[in-house]
Image (cartoon, rainbow, N blue to C red; front, top):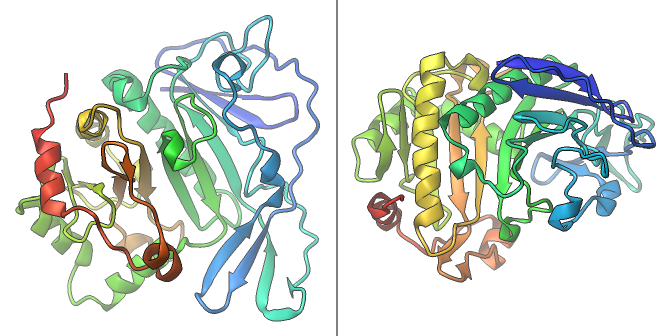
Length: 357
């Protein structure tokens, strides 16, 4: 993998990832104002969680037609977020970031009228990772070589963002499908560098701390020998968790404890691509139309709790049946108590039975 760093017209960083040496000298010709954000993080004293307030994102690009896609390669007639005429994988700072290293730091100590709600600047970083210059492809049909390049880009960005001051967690994810809330159809994912630990990570670390034994290892060992395994190889197992919340949900675990994508060996990265493309193909062909999904890397905190963590990926879909979605209604949205419309064992059976062309 060759990583080449350049800058866009407004000073944002863009990194090209290539499998072979490729000149990357195109210049962004656009006249862009500097990116400015007044994001804040606010402490919820009842839940003990940080909430990001990013009102400026209301004006971000929303489902443009294909010929106006900002993630396609640039042409002489139209400059995009990627100045080159073609590329393999590209990562750049989000033009409409929830968190930023250039955030306005002049914020009061607490929310107006409520001293229990502490305020901090929304310092961090948000990046877009574009998997291919081909607008009409998806991750499921990238092929092993390109998918492996994406894994290497994930590892590169995890290391780079983990080194930024104030970053506590690096989150890699992909939203796929309009039902999920995707605002750009071009195949891409995102990288968030949080200035706090996300609630899910905090809760898991709490469970790990109180468990008598090795919680991650015991969960993985039990699921590898159980009825919910969908795909596996020497280094990875993909299974439907026994207490799955979503209609179709998988967890992909490496067989060796590692904290994040950057610490995976070459063999483990290759093996991940094999299993991941397998299960994405099953999601794409479970119904007549490909399922929407969220792919969510659960990486270790940058600092505290890192040694206890076990890297894993969640892949889940809101699709419960053809034309039917799982909505987060009263119990889920109001109380955080999930009610599943499918059985984990039935979902595993259905995914194993999928024949991928």
